Image 1: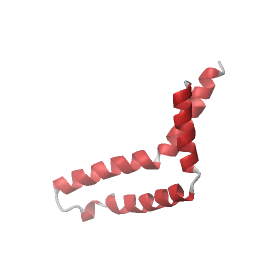
Image 2: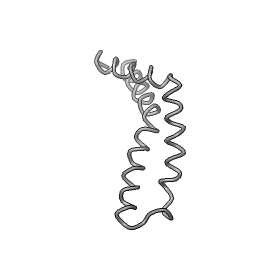
Image 3: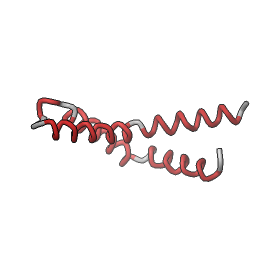
Image 4: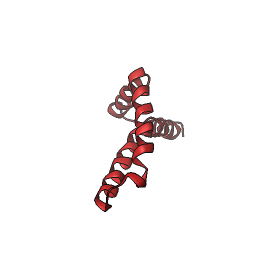
Length: 80
């Protein structure tokens, strides 16, 4: 892994340790449950908008595990 990528992962890892990040993730998980409810969709456009919101929420909610996995994969490759 190049130094720039390693620094990027380290910067994100430091964010993940902050209480603010943990609070944000908890709030987004709660919001995702509400957004994921199709009964609240007014029409097809609103349903598609909710789908986009859920896509973004999934990216953010999975960011920490994605970065951890990328770091592990990079470590495994460098150990070969």
